[in-house]
Image 1: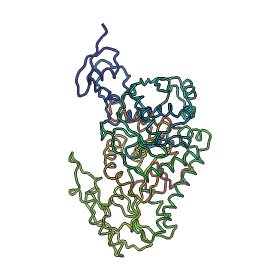
Image 2 (image 1 turned 180 degrees about the vertical axis):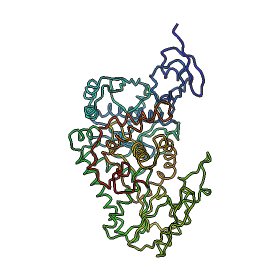
Image 3 (image 1 turned 45 degrees about the vertical axis):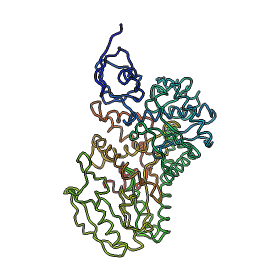
Image 4 (image 1 turned 90 degrees about the vertical axis):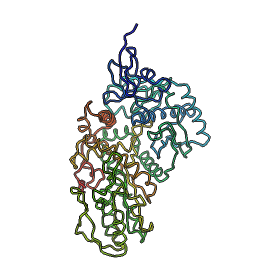
Length: 555
């Protein structure tokens, strides 16, 4: 008889299993027929795939789709199934996994071929077939040269370009029968783990729908976000034209000494777009109030300042108002369920006074703006008195800018609403997208450390609440915008890397943030570093996070 070991499964208790059992086999013992709900495991603050061997006295937390890491595993695995189905049906086409649009993941063909309405049903049928076969997904580590040769053989030229720029001893690959691919992060043990999915026709590509942490075992309803889709489409076209769609091509330009030109072109594109937004505003005499909104670390401060410059070029003299100065006194601030103050709620803003002041300004009256004292938690007189006319548009920057409640008494014809975010036109490769949330988190951890006195632990501690607040207060209103602006810079992660890596390495296995820091370190490892920052303009969005600029990065 083999030797037995004891393991403890969170929520289940102690189990006795055979020595050499995989985590998948432990999950089968723990959950019976429901074991396929669990896609990975967390052990000592680190995430593992289910092929890992269990050890004696191991404490295991299995991860279902309600956990962010379980959701990531489900996302990658259903992506693999979609790619395999397309490969069988359209062997001559390359699938690209591009971005989330709401709760759905947009995918397309790289070479310009569209996915027709009839193709959708055929792909879905093939995906169902692959899932029902419950094919094993095997993870292997190969010497770098062998991995590159294998990717070349299977036509993954984007991965070949990437790994040829990196000094890696080993490459992780996944095999499903004869199919070979590579993914940034773990997959489920077999295709049968991702039974819940749907496909939606979204010309020229398709939307892959599957459960989310919020919907759990149900597929969420797809809500079209056509403005966001157009911004992504424009960014993707620009990236492909300049051969900057994937990290491998960016790394090549760093190695070849061409990165200075990339920086200049990318920054010029930003400048041109901001100028066009200013021109659009100045063409309409009714516009008096410019609302700028976006999630954390989108670059709102720098964007608003650059927009103000372009408005001045057009003969305007913009005045900035911060929504933060309209916070209600601390004791009137709404609270969350846990009793903590909810500073990101729109009810934390004195909406009545803000609207009264804006109306008074529109009517030509002088207004003394309030100033919020964050130390005492009370609104104070600022002594700053302003009066505006048609040549003085008011720029209002804040997370609630697109929420109709913020400026409910102001006619829509007098408002111009701008949504900004770092939408990330760059992907790791054709099958591995870069999360816009990850880009913003890396921006924020660098800025928090350099300018706000927050260490990496404090950034992670706050981030979960920030993301939760964005889902309630920002993202539901993004389609209300008159225009969207993508603040992502194709080269920025190669700059941010040298600042972020030392911070992330401070986190050890004793920290609950260890698995997240390890994931981000692995992600940043795909990027070569840009050491010379002299080409980055002083007014670049990136300067808000790394410094060395003429903007108020401390705000």
